[in-house]
Length: 473
Image (cartoon, rainbow, N blue to C red; front, side):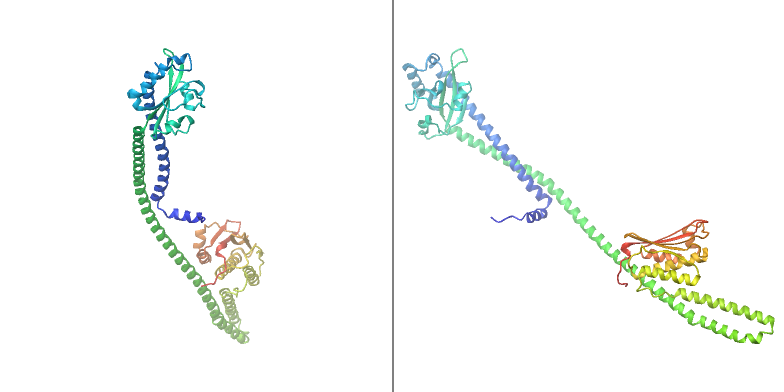
């Protein structure tokens, strides 16, 4: 026999609609219940009909047989006259037409009288029905005629109803004998068969009606659920499509932001190069010309003072332009780790300002994608510039914190601080507004904390899943 695959059965079952599943389960359950109920009902009907028939026959027998066998209260034998009277009773009366065989039992299974066969005086093992009759009960059943004493009744070839009826002594409840008679049960058997058929038909019709009504209710509910499920699936599909579109738009926005940052960096490099190659060179040339003309004005004090003033202004302007040019031009950090990039920013700041920066950048990821690396470099550069500009470089500190889920970079100083809110800080044009926009566009957080006399603390945070290396588009 091939083995049934449980997973296949479960898959087929899940493919069934709710109404079909309900019909199958309910049909099986109701069929089992109705089978039990039908068996019980038909059994009760059979028992009831059998007992009523047996009681009626036993009553008739008691009124006809009991007066003839009263002598059994004193002995275990019947007189010839009593035997003759019993024979005439079965031969010439209506009882004889209904009763095909008749026995009278004594104690211990002794056959005192029998209408068929020569078994009088013999003993047989008492049956349960015989014992019950000796207890005062009328017992009846459709016989199978398997007992030894029933071989003569078996030869009749008709269905028989076996009835055991106690025979009482007159005016007392003492059982003096038990009458056993076999009635022709052909008509009764036909009636019982008709009752069985009618009972089972009723049970089947009630079962089908119950299943039909319940199936109708569940079918309507199942159809409603299926319609709602179809609507829900369409809505889920629409939402999924919108989510995909949103993801695509977000990716496009991220790519546009990163591309804009790249263009901005290229633009700043070009501006720095132009400042260095244009105005810076011209100012340098002007300073050289002024230096070559200085001997001509050595004697004129006023002219010499004016020349020195012009030369000082030109020198300051040249220094500012070179500083701007150096700030615009981003160093080559593409191949550097984020930690090396921070070290480069600190070193360039210290060389440019002559101040010291305390660094604690050991907790840093191995590398991050280029757009965030440039953003972090600009953040450190701008934060240290602000610390130098507003705090004189006092207490400059750079710290990184990375726990595998969040990467946090902090730039702080020990300056005078300020009491402005975050919005006011960004509205003051302190060089942080554009940097914050860049951080936020890359899914980061930008925070500014400052109090008068407690310095300033700039913090940027990036989730770890935004740091992953990927090809910049």
